[in-house]
Image (cartoon, rainbow, N blue to C red):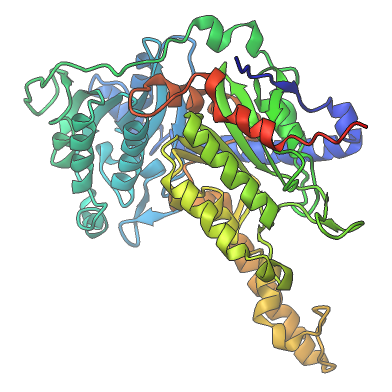
Length: 537
């Protein structure tokens, strides 16, 4: 019978990086992580202590206090959508912010099982709905529907924030679409439980209607009888030892991830060092290692559960047809595209969830790429990932550029969750590249300004810098999160714990998709057919 054998991957930080480089990387990341935590704390405070006191004066808990009381003791809450609407002001000249769009969405462990919690923040305009509040709620419902994860609504809502109703009420994904998602969850036997607290007006009052169980406090304004009994999903049999036993201890510390990524996005690093710090016991079964070396594909365990990993290799790799030539990493070439398409299909066939670790500059371009039919191979990859039924999780480690971001299951291709880091740069292209394109007629073949006129040269330099600065500002991960272009920003050292929760959610309810016994995976056939075995004379 076939057996899955995982192999050690990675090395110690002392072997992987010069101590000075690691210290510089870690120091820069520490600044970014401190900023990330400060911004999270600012958002978690809602409209501040004054409004928390108003909630307490009514004899109620704040929403975060409710979540802390709901979750299992010693367990952690994993928010998503924290930075939705970050930096935006609503309501005109004397307007107010809407921290986290006035609603908290998170993965929370309750009675040992993971659930999606959707909770109105009663410290922000009494739980009102703002622009993007419906879309944020719908995104959380989408995760629950795709993974058949129970939903818990903590409803304390005074309805739409009326000055911005035109941005919230109409439209395909406006407030009314939430109730369609309620219905789809119910039709697919996904448990929905609602706790109703105090003000529950308009849309907030409708949310619990299709829930399987509704619990109300004495201060609740509405009266809705309980619906059908909660129907539990069929869960894979997972023991405590499987998930958290001694076999899942990491060989390398996860906090070392904060020092692996260079502060300069143009500097290379070894992505296998990243995999070694998120995989259980730093064990990894790499498949197809001798082709498409700009991509890394293989099987690991996260929290004791099998998961496929596809990652961009940033290092120089040998050109497959030109001896002695190398190619830069982080780019999708023909062999790598075919490799990850094949691996993605195999994971889908075997029912193995997929983690995409993106640090991609885009597809290869130029005469060689066109001759090799790169567009056709790219279309094959996009079709594969568009039709996969297996859950996929995307992590934007650093660069997420151009069509490469799409092809590697960026948010438009419906990963269950997309995570970013404080150094993520999401855009069509880098600012410098776009500035060169915009001023191409003013530059020579080496991208140097051709004009000899000092004033014209200064004007071109200023114009190029303005374009570069604007694009760089647009690539800020907090802007992407504010617009819901990514689900959450996490520190690299937090990736391991987030991925553990997400992978467990992929396995918690298994009746909706195929999950094959590891002994009969098609991966074993793939290894036999593609392993490089030189002839031994």
